[in-house]
Image (cartoon, rainbow, N blue to C red; front, side, top):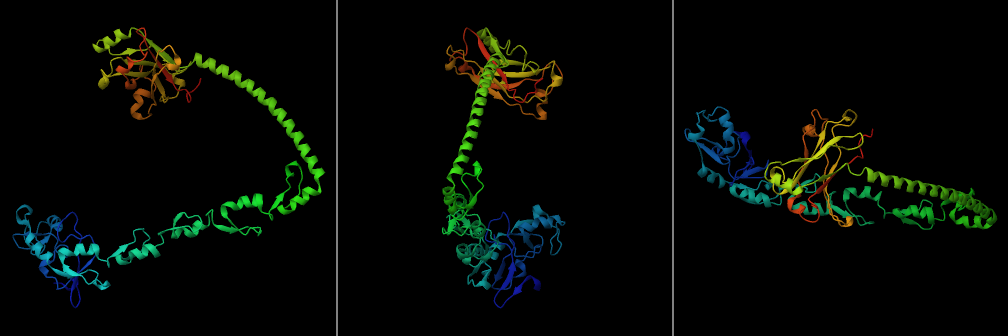
Length: 456
């Protein structure tokens, strides 16, 4: 065996071993880059000729009797399919087989703990080393709080409780949980941290969060203006001297206060007149808005007559779609048209009323914004005689402006674009409830949001 494969000691031999991935068995090891200390020098027969490490799940080349790790077989085959020891040609399907008996020999190799130099006295077989390393208190581990410290597992508890800069503590002042490394910076902003009054008053130390109020309203040493400052008095002194200043010249301060009152009364009178004027303007505008809402509420209320006949025609497949008259979203807006499938469209047939809308070619298209992006709401109107008791059904659509939707939302090239809407607008059973159908008529309302629409 080559000398550089071993680190010889008086009683044992050390060799590194890979951590095989995706394999089960006695040699599986999750402790990468660990030295394995064998009690006896490792026989060359137990060494993989490819990775030069202890054989792991060995496979046997039947022609020549040599072995390699199962994980190294792929490298052998990629290198020409020859035994790395004697260059015998190998057929992967016929000449290679797992050598479980030899694996059992490897499992029984005697070795000491990989961390014997740290003080561990365990020794046993290869098949037991993984279980031991999982529990060994001498295994070096990284701090789980990610402070960067590497230490023996036996020292981890003390590190987390006493030394780790990322361990959690509570602020002595505000009791908020912080880490040790944050403690110094936290104290610079902690509201409960006690700091001395900058004026060195008798109050002494004050919580940081109360300092501003102390200086503005309480500190006797704080420089403050006269309470009649806004009235014209320019005197300024420490708070404890203000009382004497006010007491010494009451007549002048009273005159200042009277002047301020007179000015404020004039301002209040002017504001009262302005408020009355604004109130009158608001009332006029409310009346105008109310009138406009009645004249130009929704863009279309579509009255569909002979509902039962049209429903029957749709059921029989004779006329599955009904179109509304074209309408404009505004006086000079988009030209649109609605359509419905009384007995449903596609997968909604027989279960839902389907409703759609399309953009038609209009006179003002050159002046409008494209693609169309305004929210559309369809409403099935409840015709109950009491307007307060109506339970309308509304469905809203916000167009998704993407390239794939250009055929629906772009400026029309032909007479009209493809239709879009809701296959499942309202269930057919629901339509029969309440007063959605009255006198064999149905009303469907269409409202187009005009908040961001170009006004011509």
